[in-house]
Amino acid sequence: MKLQNLSVRAFLRKIAAGTMFTAAILVLIFYLLTKDVRIVTCGCLLTGAFYIWGIVFLHYFQKKLSLFTDGLCRTLDDMMDRTERPQIDYEAETLLSRISHRLERLYHVMQKTRHKVELEKEDLQSLISDISHQTKTPIANLKMLNDTMLTRPLTEEKQKEFLQATGAQLDKLDFLIQGMVKTSRLETGVITLEKQAAPVEDTLVHAINGVLALMEQKEISFSVDCPSELIVSHDKRWTSEALFNILDNAVKYTCAGGSIQVSVQEWEMYVKIDVTDTGRGIPEHSQGAIFKRFYRDEAVHDIEGIGIGLYLAREIITMQGGYISVESKVGEGSTFSVFLPIK
Image (cartoon, rainbow, N blue to C red; front, side, top):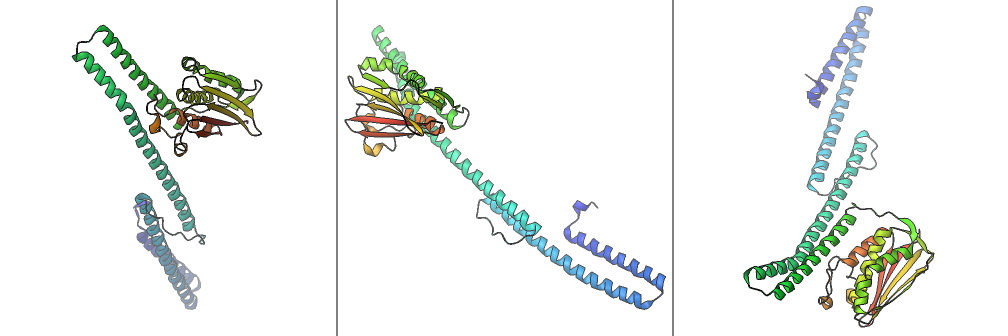
């Protein structure tokens, strides 16, 4: 029979039998060598005493092992059932207590992993729900436009109008998908930001170029105050994306003929980039929610947008060790301040 197939009780019995057999052989040898009954008697008494203490030790060991295995099973059951962990004797210094400590650490690691998985699952469900909600309207509009063009006779002018409307809905879907791809790639770590020393002016110019056409169309006056020699460690591409989203919001919510000012200041630990507009402003109760994914205030539903630009901007700046703040008054405009760490 292989050792690993033996039960603990059978193993202890074999140990006891082996000990008795060895003791009997030794007593017999002593008797044959000395022919003295007293020595043999003393040997038998000594063997008996050792045997009794051996039985006591083995009984204690078996009981201790049984208690440990029971505790181990309870620990494993609790780890699988996600219930509270069993109490650990922190003052014990035995080998079994060391194993118990390792199991407790494993328990905490598993609980932490479960919690992380649950949070990721909630985020995924929220993301799927947001995507479903955001894509429902443009898809419904596309279906309606397509059905109308297929089932009704339309003039060439009307067909062109419908095609333009279809193109607008497709652009909205494309913008939504691109925004979601950027966000998910940043959140999941597929894309990591690489900070390098670069002029803030170049990053800012790249962001401004994306909104120049719309500013000219709305006749918005624009001014920039940025030191040309200011160099900061940052990810130029993604920081430009964040600044573009803030500027795009400023242009969208500023009425025709308004103004936007961008100013850059070097502080002791941060570079502060202010984007100030003369738009409609943000109510105080909404200022804490505007950076949430897909959030849009009821008052701005007449303006095109999906509510992901500011969320993406905050994620990009936060990942670089910075932050964004906002000051705004309804009817007077807003100032978004981007703080980038100098090092």
